[in-house]
Image (cartoon, rainbow, N blue to C red; front, top):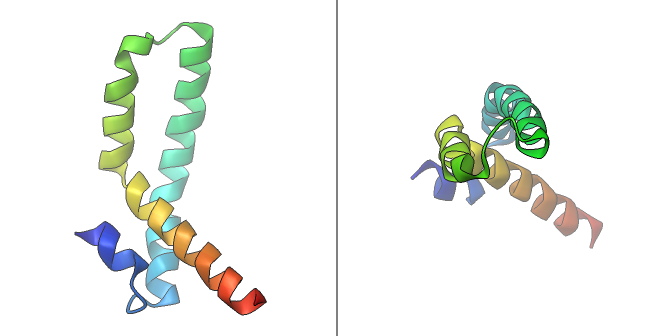
Amino acid sequence: EMTSSLVGSEMCIRDRNKVYTEKWPDIETYVKENVVKFITGNRALSEWDVYVDTLKQMGIEEVVAVKQAWYDRTQEVMQ
């Protein structure tokens, strides 16, 4: 599974950056558009699971794993 491989030390920074830069812009746009729709009632809360599934299909778990690895590395350096 891609998500578990992202957190391993084997994935180089360039690969992490590539995952992030390829996936995040579309995810960010999708989130911004849909949060507004949910808040304004233009998208029913009953569609929440579809929204989450779409985020997963877009690679949100990989992006979160990359950001977590960046955070963890920052914490290691700071100690």
